Image (tube, rainbow, N blue to C red; front, side, top):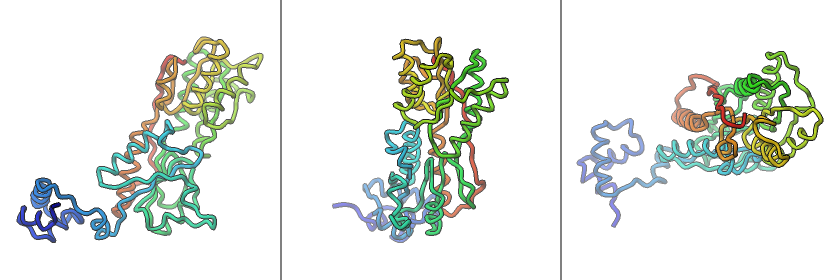
Length: 331
């Protein structure tokens, strides 16, 4: 027969109410009492009823991880998968469940948001609709925006140095002697697009170089699009000698096109990516890329969301995690 809260109370010598409070409102129970209660519960193999605990705390003990449909499924996305893992790890530490959905999943045809009363908080990743965020916040559901920035009152945005990363990638190619540098720009959220795009152009300008519009291709952020775009560049009579790709998946596709054309990387074509996802170490030669600390982004997003759920005020509106250029054999 399973142990009950009464058994735990008898074992540790505290009242049933104190044992209950140790799980539902631990801050109201002394550390000494909590230690005895938890030790007694462990020895009896007792775990509090999650549903009852949530009812007492008036929480669902669920959070949502909402990803744009273009980037779904998150578990297979080389950029968002490690971010999701970090969010799930931090949530599990607090006995929370994480529900992964797309932005389409939470919107009804009439524009309403049906996540109402089912989540204690939401992490939006990448491209996000300000109206949906606004409707969630109207329902008093805390929101953290990850890998994007929207200028909304009291909205915490966690992003990274997209502009600085792009600058470092292009400057690296310039230092390697390249003067004809292409850009394969994946279509991401407007904030990410603009930052990486501007970083490319500004870095060339600082080196006294003018970007050739023929070398700049706006594409979907996929392997197939990267391969197709690079094939187009290789057909040019005066093709670029290097290319900066705004994510590693596009870069992997570009490398496929170069190899299939019988050319060598980096001697005939240098390639640099962005993100330092698992893709960058699978391809051969290994990919030079701009590293984003995805684990830190996910962990920080979860920590800040739980702060908001617990009613702690924001200490800042925007957190920017720096990038780092990782030089490997592709450049």
